Image (cartoon, rainbow, N blue to C red; front, side, top):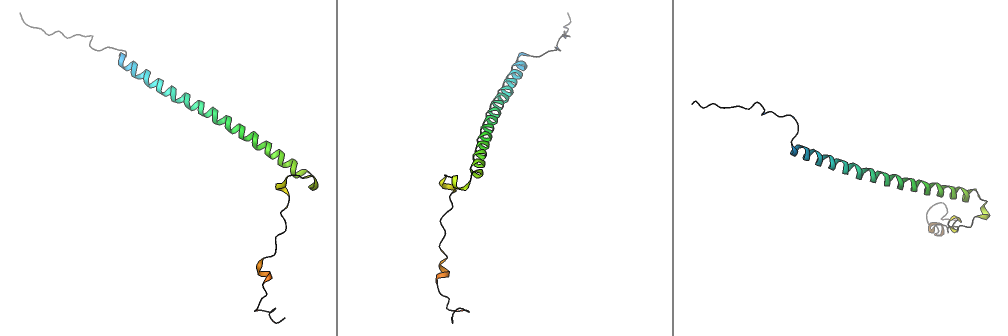
Amino acid sequence: MPTTLRFSLRTVRSGFTLTELLVAATLLIAVLSVAAQLTVRTDRLRQDVRREQIALDELANQLDRILAADRPQRTCPALTPPPPRPPPILRKIPQRFGPAAGA
């Protein structure tokens, strides 16, 4: 009897293997977890920016109220003018040379 080789016509299969599906699912989970973390961080950053904006608006309102008040009504010690500065030391030293030296 002659030996015949039988070739199967079903060697080409369509579809995905279990390994391909596991790799695809793992990649999908990794991408979704990164996207979720970025979404949470973005939301927290947006909340922080909003809080800072509210604080800056409140400070601007208080500064406007202080500056709009009459000068005697200001009680904040930081807004009182500093005492007058003494004249520079060079004005106290007599000049030996120049037009004022002979006078």
